[in-house]
Image (cartoon, rainbow, N blue to C red; front, side, top):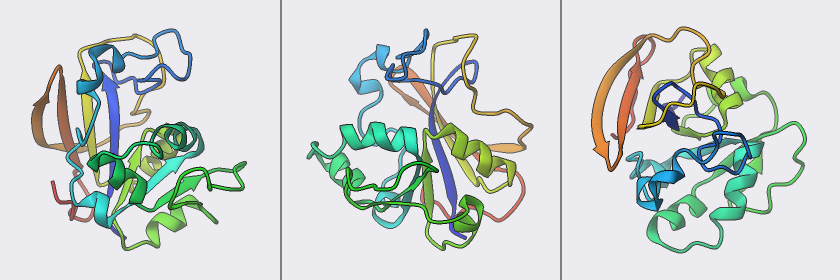
Length: 190
């Protein structure tokens, strides 16, 4: 199995729900209130992983991204469009709306364990929760914004034993990289 990296926009109190406001939640749009420079480009330091890895997305995140990314042509967008994408969905039958996308055929956990490529999960909190429950997440890259919502879906719903690997300021936010304390050593290029 390759390295599994989770990337998330997150509030100080651990909420990951609706950072862009597209979900229509009462606190939605919290990350994007800080302007496009706070969220644009390769804020998570994925670099070469976008050339060699696979993006693993839940249906809701994929549908949002499929509306946003295909029309963009800057260097980062070109990498997002080119990377192979696997969509975890029980209802989606076609992933033609965004190039290099396919619907995951079969069990999520088996598919993750059966790949030798690095996997990047962004958003897709249900997918993250399922993978974390199986102790498959090697690394979390969290862009933490100076906002507390008090309510909303959270990244962690069960105990996690993590070790801080790196901290970097990204405009108004902080990029925190945590690695799993147990299991195989990550091979990510951070």
